[in-house]
Image 1 (cartoon, one colour):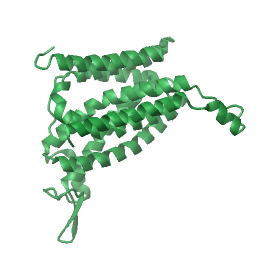
Image 2 (cartoon, one colour):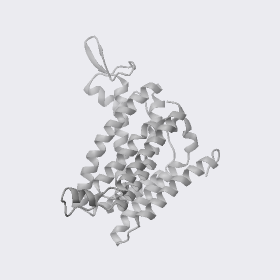
Image 3 (cartoon, rainbow, N blue to C red):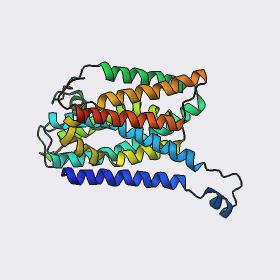
Length: 291
């Protein structure tokens, strides 16, 4: 996918998310309640729209770091670009399903055990600080990776790629190709990513509908965003620090609830958005210098 086409798709999915946000804002709740004779139906469009926007910005911000990991995985295993698209497509489908499970379980846990938000807050602060101070190291991805060994215990794994296939038959035996192992590796990294991103959105809202839809709209644009970062990743070298600060902020926002301190939704969105934009600007203005 060319950089121009990728940018157009990123703009398209961002536009769709904003249209959905507007739909939430202007949702005719009263008219629907009257039409279906629902006397108790209520819908705070302005509040829900802000929550969706905040969740979407958080998810998009945090996904950048995850996409860098995807880039490392693909480059380490020398996966052709045409094969990357197939893996990303299946990865997105898997992410949609896994996020639904995580969000349903997470929302249920928060509603039953409200104090779990404080734990999420502490974990997010820890993750953010760790990301900020941890020295950048290239992960060790090779054919001896534990995913390959684990998959090999279930089904034989062929040594070479066979077109875009996940499975291939050799001498009447079914083999998994390395592409399947890499897909599993991508899904595992997304699970780890969700451990940070979903609690971060809980700092904005615990409404399952808002959490899930903001996640889905962010996920839908991931493939296009990946191909943008693939070509411009050096221009986003300091975004990592912005993501770390966002994690710390969302963690603090959750943690201070223990002291009955609540940071407003509008202020939260402004801080998160400003942090992301500032990290991008610093990356652009200081491309060859260390902070």
